[in-house]
Length: 177
Image (cartoon, rainbow, N blue to C red):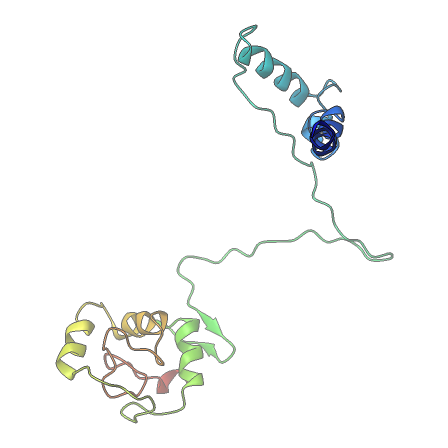
């Protein structure tokens, strides 16, 4: 019995002899190299054992520059961020559509049926409940975006499209095509 217990415990004892977390975590392997984190760790351990004050900050060292893949003979160009003025109108491949969004333009081009032409099967829902839902939105564009976001035209969880044409609250896709 004693022999079996020793055999079962020998891997655990072998791992314990390797040292605490040595090798897999750079923070732990650097505990004795004099880095800022090593000093913090030693202060923290002393505070936990009642032999010193609690350190107030945890040092974190981040890379000064992110690594980049550079192909031989190619110049590295830093990335730029485009600044869009707050009053800019959305622009799509077909041109600007004042008051519209790319989501609505894409949807108008995707759906080929005209308003009033049933393209989706609807069960339940009424014109009265649809009108009630539409009154909650400031414009037909806002209602159509909410309809698309809720799963429309395949789904109509709010009953906004009782005729099944894929358009709600009088929204007309034809000007955006």
